[in-house]
Amino acid sequence: MKELRDKNGLTEKEFLKAYKPGDYERPSVTTDIMVLGTNEDITCLKILLIKRGGHPFIGHWALPGGFINKDETSYSAAARELCEETGLKDIYLDQVYTFTKPGRDPRTWIMSIAYMALVSELERVEGLDDADDANWFDLMIDDDTLSISNKDIGVDIRYRLEKKTFRNGKISYENYVAEPVSSDKLAFDHVEIIIESILKLKSNFEHSDLAFNLIGDKFTLPDLQRLYELVLGKKLYKTNFRALVASKVRPTGQKRKSLSSRKMSLEYTYEG
Amino acid sequence: MKELRDKNGLTEKEFLKAYKPGDYERPSVTTDIMVLGTNEDITCLKILLIKRGGHPFIGHWALPGGFINKDETSYSAAARELCEETGLKDIYLDQVYTFTKPGRDPRTWIMSIAYMALVSELERVEGLDDADDANWFDLMIDDDTLSISNKDIGVDIRYRLEKKTFRNGKISYENYVAEPVSSDKLAFDHVEIIIESILKLKSNFEHSDLAFNLIGDKFTLPDLQRLYELVLGKKLYKTNFRALVASKVRPTGQKRKSLSSRKMSLEYTYEG
DNA sequence: ATAATAGTGTCTATCAGACATTATCTG
DNA sequence: CAGATAATGTCTGATAGACACTATTAT
Image (tube, rainbow over all chains, first blue to last red; front, top):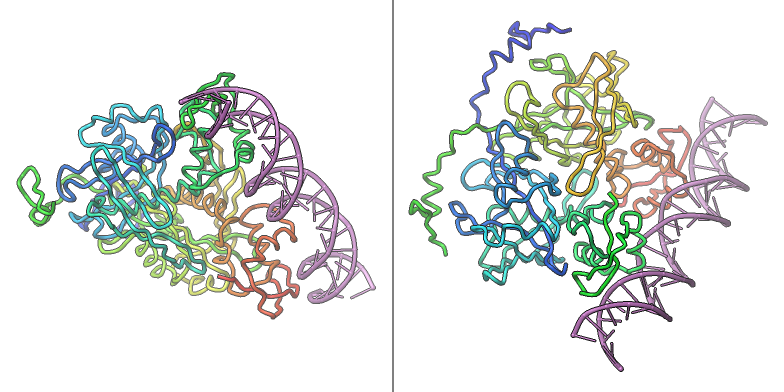
């Protein structure tokens, strides 16, 4: 069983020794990372974008990311790029989807493995406000509009969303198609990456502990509830919300002001 | 805004015209497809594997799949490979995860975008039993063992599963690590692909209509329930199950024998 | 002092879990 | 006919949705 030979009479060892990768074309593969946080009072999601300094899409805003090296996984590449470009590390980072449509990058054949990163309020500010061309943007999404804006630098990128139904085997599912309605647009197919990631975040949010990556180590329940309401896009009932998270949190015994309401409230921490 | 020039003074058009992909190394990218079905009486999941005819892993069983071409998406590549290798088309096909660990292919740097395909009993048999080296295997998975076997051809591949906890940001999640316990093993990291895909199938199964891709157009409720029990790995109560699927199915008015029990039962169809 | 928010109590509709009963079918 | 399975009815406990009320807090 060990010394099987192929049609050329080679063992596996001999085959691998002689192996030369073919001459057919190969794609470049990048990671693109959607980094999400919230603003001070948890009223708005924030997304981190980088201004492109070279062609293509020069001057356009894009997701941070970069090419994957031969000796790393896509996860390590995403973590490395994130740290290099923003200083963020040890944060939540998860693979979302791989984008492969030919022509998605006008240069050449480039696939992108999309990741989603979540940062809490406390880590969020660090070293970014004055980074060369990185900036946090308000991200707002509802049933028919996606908007990415930053008043300070006068950027307002808007897409109109249209629901479209796709079939897959015997079942069908809905997805959004984005049409730009502002003169500013995101680079590449990064809108699609953002939409896909947001949908995944929403659908996992209620039944996982993802929320605790978007809030500090110590928090109040009103703040946590604001966060849930912000991501899910709907009001929740206080009592029901507290029952939902009761088993996940533990009171610290302290009190603190809620970030959202500026009122005193009991402080809690995540029971990991 | 249209005629931005980069540091070399080039417009985007000029840049793209002059663009030469760098000389740095690029990975090959394949798709691997986990095709799932069930046996005649819905007592066992079936997985489609192909026997490798060349190095590496010559003689080992592997997921069907192949390289992605420059002019197609990973989805089209998966659909194309599936049709070429098995004749299956117009079936459920969905991206699962992209595997990138260096060394996962002993030849060279190869990433794989994993897909999951679901086929119903009726389409399933078509043209495969005597395909060169493709075969359906019984797939069984529980908390500590994964087994892939086919009595007819005397194959019994087994892995011991160990739960391991990983951290991601502030939260932690569990995953399985597989150790082979049979002399036969799957090619490459295909065990990991199978485990990841099965977990995704299970977690989506209850709250989606995935099930209807694994059963014929017309079916009995007892059969549909067997399918749910098989995938979820637990007994369900008839009444509760019927309440769950009531809104998704419609009686045809006919009767037919259940595949699982061989008793007469009302026939239903999927209300897409 | 007042308006807003925190914390808690409770009522209800819904739904999953769990049996029980009767009808029907196969061998 | 006997044993198994189909179809349906109903009870229970958990939980999400929905308000109400009181205590606290910021301005």
